[in-house]
Image (cartoon, rainbow, N blue to C red; front, side, top):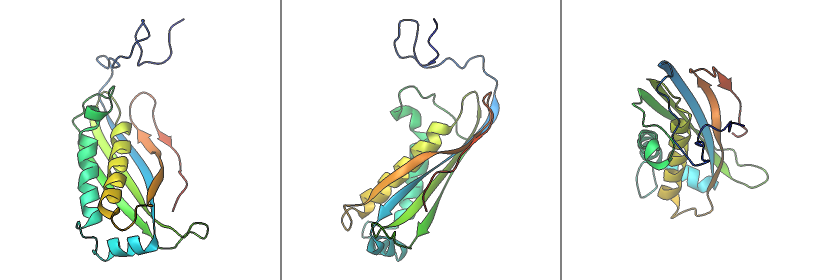
Length: 169
């Protein structure tokens, strides 16, 4: 029986999928994730009072850089010539009634014209942006955490369109 997982060769060892014969199409992927923090931390971010600088501006650049470097850190990803990466942030100042935390939703969209999709680039952009928020704010809030990182949309390629909502702010 042939292994249905495409990242393994006939010997059961990892391989990069061969996309030589795939059609070049426009591909797009959007991912999102949540960063949770104390209300005071979000206030400091909003007011530009974090000592390391403009948290969201740095996280935006870091996320874009992460998307561009995805194939360097995810072993089986193909290097892509991205045609666009955009990151946005949605701040939620309403503290959760259960844990008292506020949040920032990070959304990243990556685009390419190529033979393979950009889901991993969008997911990496969100993850790196979230890590950067943590890094810049850890001096005032070591209890920050992030979760609900996932793909929300993808289009292009032979599998077509995928869309889902992920819980959060």
